Amino acid sequence: MASGGSKSVASLLLAVNLALYFIVLVIASWAANHGIQRSRESASVLSTPARIFPIYFPMGNMATGFFIIFSLIAGVVGFTTSVTGLLNIFEWNAPSLHAAAISSFTAWALTLLAMGFACKEIQLGWTDSNLRTLEIFTIIVSATQTLSTGIIHVGVSEAVL
Image (cartoon, rainbow, N blue to C red):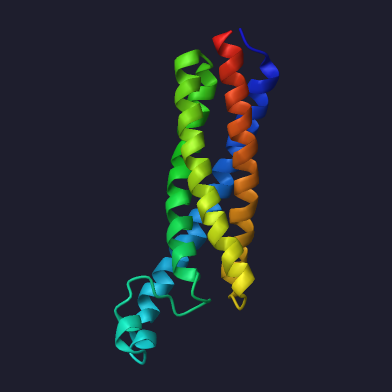
């Protein structure tokens, strides 16, 4: 039906994405927890509009809150997409590949959104080393997710034929 090359490359990329999304998820979870714990004392000295702003993080810059939240969402969606994508790739038939294709596209879109906030945070400057690590992993996982989505879509076109 389809060539074994696309299947093996897709499996390898999904396994790499699984590990990368797990790392993104762990670092983003730590950053969100750290921000929640420290925001009470840091935000108490701010003026009223900034004090009640729900996405205030005491580390980083003004893009940090959005970056952490969207990295967390992209990490959760990407991790579950990689797990279900691996299961769908092992079946390698048209319905399962279509499910893997649409879920990988969704994870790709969310990862690119998080990567955009990572680039904005890099542009604004002054970030913690843990945030720089999260930025780097978000950019790397966006590239591997792009390749993975492309390979899965090639597999869909091969399986349909």
